[in-house]
Image (cartoon, rainbow, N blue to C red; front, top):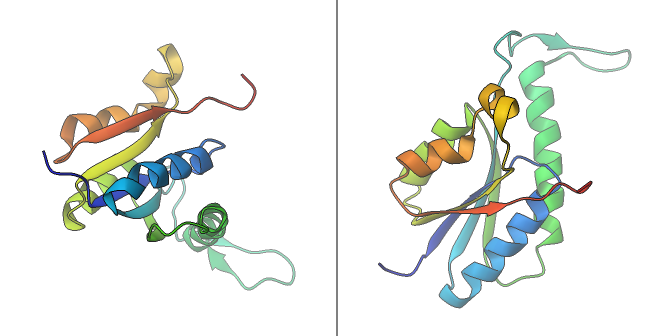
Length: 154
């Protein structure tokens, strides 16, 4: 199996996202691999994403635009904390269901490794929320490295 040259790092913007990005950088260094960090924002199924959001003094924006802008700001902050490295890092926010979006971008971008976090949910939370990592591991065209993300309060 060849060494990775293009690494995709999907993040959910939770507390463990920074540690995951840092881990991917350390893994990429010996291989001179590039890293692409993405966040997939999934529109809520019960609210139209083109619903307008407004407050006094604001221009009306769609819910999708407000959410994507907020996620982009947070992702920019995460990546800027890791920018002191020589490893090239691209990042972006995309709209779509997380698992299928990650799988599609991994193939389109010809990524040869996916590094992603897992929260290790069990029981009812896993049943209700599903496991994005499990879906990606089962269907990815390339190796997937999952890293257990511990919550800050544990």
